[in-house]
Image 1 (tube, rainbow, N blue to C red):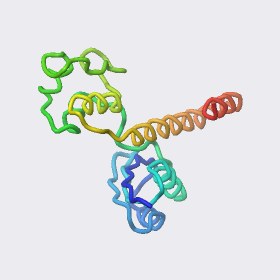
Image 2 (image 1 turned 30 degrees about the vertical axis):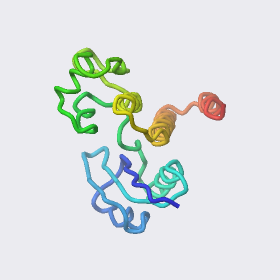
Image 3 (image 1 turned 90 degrees about the vertical axis):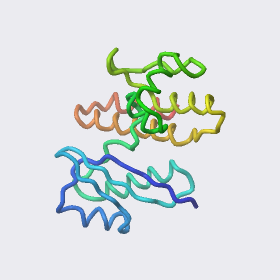
Image 4 (image 1 turned 135 degrees about the vertical axis):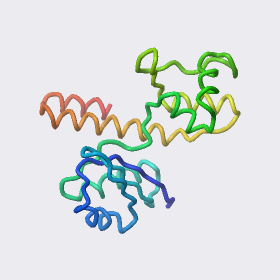
Length: 176
């Protein structure tokens, strides 16, 4: 078993429910109460794989009445400033890499956003940096976070507009 740190964005957290969160996580949680919609809950959890740790963490948090996990952090879509923070560079350095003014070129293309505020997929950026810096990367973590966050988003959308036919088709798609 390995100890993994899992951070979740959770809806429904308030100060009255903190004891329930601590009980559900055996006192291991660190809670940062955010705005009225979401808060951050992080804790270490022992599991065989990172995927097992994430799914177990979600189960533990969602055992608390009124709480639902919105997504696993860190978010996989990042702005240039977030890229700079994660790789320990300046925002200007990242801008030069994006524009091909430094580095080997071929920086990943943005996947969303607009011209002034593009968003990149972190897994793509991390793979690019790994190749640029000649180092190994953890391929499990971004794959798990992306898949789980996609499932959480699908679940949330189906709760807003229940559609049994769509739910069955999504289940078939995920099982494929």
